[in-house]
Image (cartoon, rainbow, N blue to C red; front, side):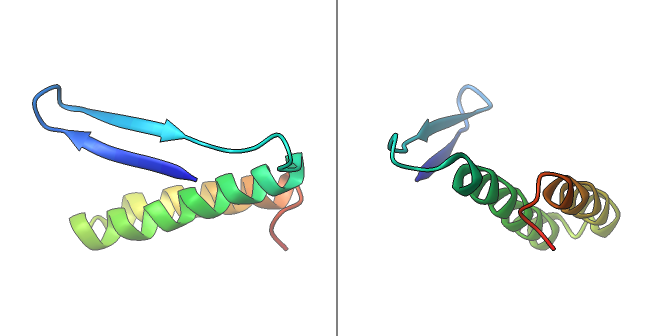
Length: 71
């Protein structure tokens, strides 16, 4: 589980990452890629910056393929 909150006063993200040692490396890789792709969708909806969203999505889709978690 990841929890991230925006700290307006500090203009920074507060984040807590929680996982167990039972989580396999391949599961963490997939979790990581899926989270970034989901955050990219959120970014695009919030900013309407389609160009940057497409760039990030293309890059991390390629990373996901290279590490074997996306087909």
